[in-house]
Amino acid sequence: MFEGNEIQLAVGSQFILDSDTTIGNQARVFLPHPEMAEVVEVGDEIILNDGLVVAECIEKIYESATSFKITTKCIQSGPISNKKGISIPCRLIKTPFPTEKDKVCIETSNMLGLDHLMLSFVQCPQDVLSVRKLMPNAHLMSKIETPVGVHNLAAIAEVSDSIMIARGDLGVEARLSRVPMIQKHMCKQLSGKKAIYCGTQFLESMVVNAEPTFSEINDIFNAIHDGVDGILLTGETANGKHPVEAVRWLKNVIDQALAVQNL
Image (tube, rainbow, N blue to C red; front, side, top):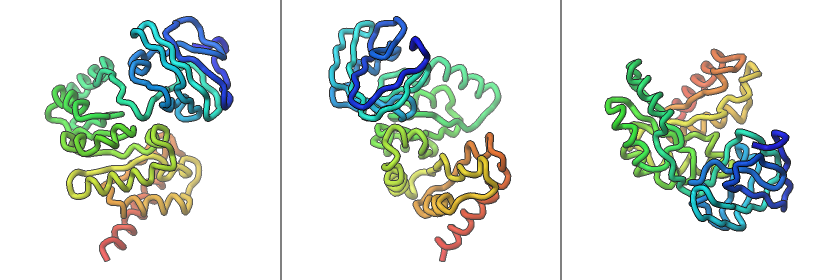
């Protein structure tokens, strides 16, 4: 927590993440995730506030889960505030999977008779197997959202029923410019082996506009030719102004792409 809810970090400025639970300020803040402090190394990039801010670890002092200090240098300026995300893309974070909250959701899913479940931020096969024990008969779709998940794709796919390329968080965790390459790599690796789906911002402009942009149409077309088995709309149908039209446009472009593919 910060004194004024939000601070601005400038390029080159130093900022500390530590185990001190007092209110944060322009120089430091409490990191409530000791598992991150344990695995981070000097030179690692630390992503803050959904990718708005990027810092590099320049010094690490870790004695225990209640005594640590991570000094960082800002390499991409921006705001950080209360209750915002933090990640270390190149590290496997040792957190419980599923969490206690997840287990409650899984128990509710079982009570309701749900037969499909999407698992967020899957990083290794054991994540899937842990949920499989709690929902042995459900279809489990593993969302790949981190570089670690991409690296472990083959092993994760082997124990999953399907895979989702979750481009939104991948864009934050693995850098936006690498997402198209990752999408193609994942489709190629799983072609003919496992159903693979893709989501995030396919028709983002239709949250407001009645028609998509050319680049969005091209994005859908390319995804089909990459080999995805399905495309998910999120904001377009969850809170967009034109949900039905968005689905119609998506189906139309998919049909056109498949027609060309089958020539």
